[in-house]
Image 1 (cartoon, helix red, strand yellow):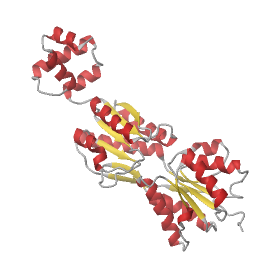
Image 2 (spheres, helix red, strand yellow; image 1 turned 180 degrees about the horizontal axis):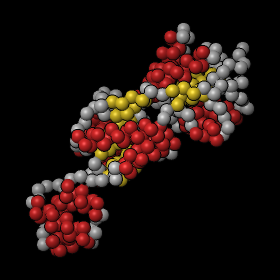
Image 3 (cartoon, helix red, strand yellow; image 1 turned 45 degrees about the horizontal axis):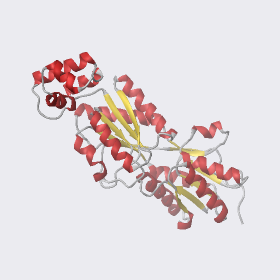
Image 4 (tube, helix red, strand yellow; image 1 turned 180 degrees about the vertical axis):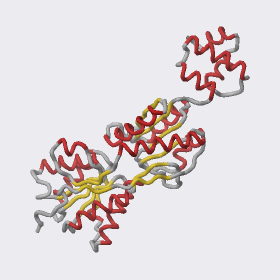
Length: 337
């Protein structure tokens, strides 16, 4: 059914019906109610959306993530979903594929859907307040997670990545390693920089030299873990240990190590940032920074509900502290000449 037919059934003009559907422009309450009633009767749009037009509220929450293939974000979504289900809220999930141009299109699409709230983890590009201005202007409550905005604080749930980077590096140093490489996240992200800061802090506090040639910038994806580990193994022979700054890059690193017929920790020690479920499936004991990811998703959802209830942006920050799980992959077995 077209807008013209809704207009004919309701007795109002096409432009009036259009204003009601888009929720843009003045329409009297009585007229709006009549048009919405017809919209529901003929199922022009889903009943839930029609009701949301009437109340200016919806029963949906938009979740925008940068990489739907990364199991980390899948676990986050699972935690969010648990809370949304309990509150009779529907969840719409969007992936930006780490592309800022697609991210902008997703923002526009989400705003047009008029959700009651938005949960967002930004893409890899360096983000400032201007990059999320369209969300700010929409007035829709939103919560950030995982990656922060560089030039302003917004409501969100984030991990203490400096602590995580410190714990991982400290474990390698305490095991006797001195030449420790790090495969970081992108320097365009707050968590990429913060994990590197934790690495540097541990090295300096333990009286170890921080060498720029031991710092390899990755992109949080499998390929950069693989390629950077190959470079380390082929060109940086003094390295005895690698701290790898997320789960996907660790899987890439494991592939590179396997191709060289090397063993962990006999030939090279590693610590991963993230306790990936595939480590256990593959039968590999990897020491890792552990984060209760699903429970963090629960906290993210609760924070958004709080923002929605108060209809504000509190700029409340929740910091989740990671822990370290040691499984002996950090040990020194062979000392390289």
